[in-house]
Amino acid sequence: MLLPLDMRDWLPDDHMVHFILDVVEAADTSGFSINQRGTGSKQYPPSMLLALLVYCYCTGRFSSRVIEEASYYDVAVRYLCADTHPDHDTICTFRRVNRKAFEQFFVHVLEVAAQSGVLKKVGTVSVDGTKIRANASKHSAVSYSHAQEMLKQLESEVLALTEQAEQCDGSQQQDCAFNLPEEISRRKERKARIQKAMDVIESRHAEKLKEQKQEYQRKLAAREAKRAAGKKPRGPEPKPPSEEVPRKDQYNFTDAESRIMKAGTGKHFEQCYNAQAAVEVESMLIVSNHLSTCPNDKLERLPSLDAALANAFIVKDVLADTGYYSENNTNGCEARQIEPYIAVGKQSHGILIETILGTATAALLPEKATPKERMAHKLKSPEAAALYALRKQTVEPAFGIIKHAMRFRQFLMRGKVNVTGEWNLVCTAYNLKRTFNLIKAQAATALSRDMAPNA
Image: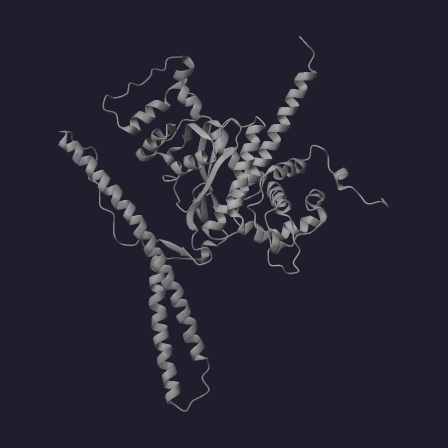
């Protein structure tokens, strides 16, 4: 112990940190920015900071201060940092300003998985989303109706305090109990913040209203086309969307781009983002990821598929639950030459007694079946049912590993752009950890096969 230690001797040869270093070393890190100020601040190689962040995310450490502390007491982290100690500000800045470079590294990890033989670049993906808490409290939010009430109250308070200040100025009294100019200024600032919140809520509603009007016109045109063909449209007449801003629409002062969403079992609400992922069913690797501020998943399917294609993964079949079903999504999949398997209602988790006894009969598809009826009929075939069953065995376990094994349940960053980068980093860490375990299992299988006695 009197001689300098080689920290490689402190880590087993099959430790994940060696794999991460090899993957980072093979990556192109020229796109990562570093400190160029020319001051006395310490400089760290981008490859070292990249490996440090990815390894710490793999092991459930996300705070830059926690990562800085780990560089002192964690042997693997100390080995990654070459016995240096990047400060938390350097780590946080590197994570924030390199969002685009992290996206390229995500694709590089997929290439490593493909070259290792654990990922096929053509196959079936399962698409789903999960709600992850934003770095903001739902108690920091204000609804549109409450904002209107607060605005009126602040206006009346400013008026009353202004009158009181004028009375004090007109009289010889100089010993007012309160500093009236400061109180007026404070209320005016609050009024400006409330007005900004209302403006944002109104602009969001205007964007949503535009989409609702387009959908309303589409439904009207479809019904008129049926009437022109001599057919009677089914169901009630569609109602035009309301121009009025919903009273419950909210704005959060801490993270304005996050939203109140149903979380957990759907019985409570949290300030969240909707994190989306497309998972390849055989390897359980995430082939694309993106972030949404929409509470539901209707508009998230096609962006996931396009992102997978941009990452050089060819999707043949896509699996999704009923939250993704729409005629537009089905048509979009077919236009991309992707076979969709989307549930249109609640799926049975058990095996019907008729199927076990062999007495089940295939239901006939109506001659004039709607797209929804055709999708439901397709999912009833044994082949489609077996394929769709893979959905809950792939994407949901991936989210479970991220939230429980990696312990990532809340974003640290704020704003959709920054949070999108953080979600990409989480998915990259998940893929690295998953690829390492798959390669390790693959090697163990090959070794046991070689050691087995010949038959």
